[in-house]
Image (cartoon, rainbow, N blue to C red; front, side, top):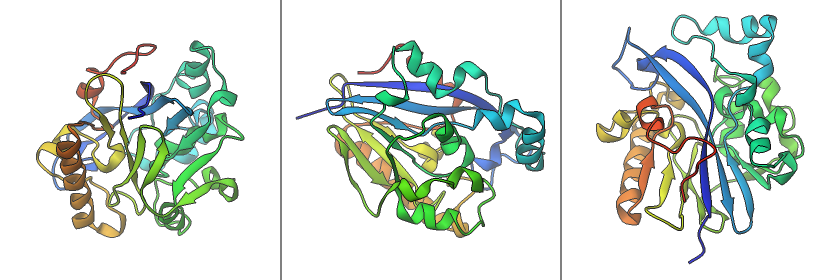
Length: 260
């Protein structure tokens, strides 16, 4: 069986927000510090990035920061992101550049997952078609319209498929219309399921709690995706990686170390 070779978690920033944004119906008034993650996956057929973090320019420029992030208060504070947390800086530490990335796989189009696309011009981008269609309605305030500027060149998919050897795209809608997770088979240890924002926290998985935000308020669809990922993990003997859980992130290998 062909497997992926290495998996690097990349900390692209942090954000403090009210926990109810991650756990529907609970956590009001309780604020948590969450990692903003991307993942670099090396496969026998090339390198994949799953998500890209924020657009650093919107945080470094005071006027842009005010425009994009101040309206999110008080539930969300502006993200904290250092220049060295941009994707190209991580790649450079491995002796790589954007030209060495063969594919960018966007789990969903919220600003903390796709904003960094500006740092990887010309890369092949994969996305679920329903995700883009929903984003273009303008109804999701966590989607920034300028980050959809070059979508004509993106490759849109409508189902689950093999992204690369050892990497399988898994449909997990609910948080957003076309949310996608990844199942990654590695040479050592258990496979990994990158949940994306189908499960921000370990609590979403263990207690089967939907994310605070569900597209068109479809909590049932979000819960069905959580249960689907849990069943897939049982079937494959895989480990589920929640996406914004600081305690869980701190248990992962720290860059430049990797999971294999």
